[in-house]
Image (cartoon, rainbow, N blue to C red; front, top):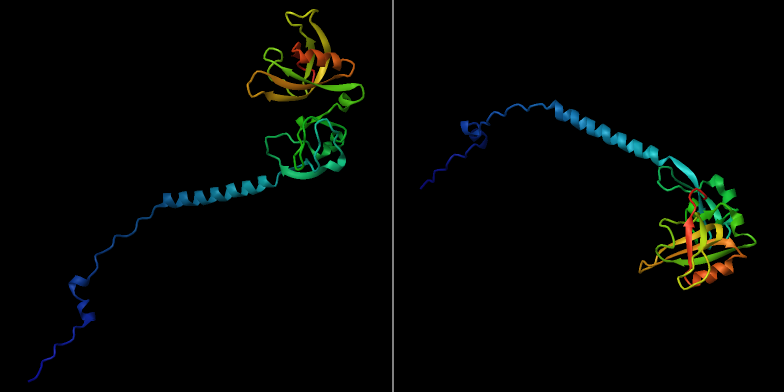
Length: 223
């Protein structure tokens, strides 16, 4: 008995039928506005990158401290080095061209190695800590010191007798330089400042300060 063989289906022929015909694709719409926007974004990014590169090149010479300088100690040229920093910073760092003046000044606070020097870290008047001068610490209560007193300010040191004390209010130091000014204590009831006064007046100031009979008055414009 013969087995009839079915003719092979021609795949290529089967694709030629109506069912294999593709639907027409609508032509793509061109969007010139989007293309223009893409170009502007690319150009804007390139411009921003260029500005950042250019601004990163704007640098100035500043002073960095290489050795620890304690409060009241004199700066030395060996403790200073030149560094390049960005010119757009908001902090007023001391320029390297001022290193000669810095070497003749004293530190108002302890300056650690690696610190970029600012004008508030040194006293311009090196003679303030010279012979015949003394630094005196004062722990003052609210009402005994105006708000905002900081290092470099000039103040009057005034004896204010207590109610039970004798004597009259008088000035003990006409124009004392504030060597340092600390934050308020943890309880917020007192403030600590250190002033530079004549060594002849320091014993009396210390005695009155220990009894809480000292106040200071700021002298605006006398820095």
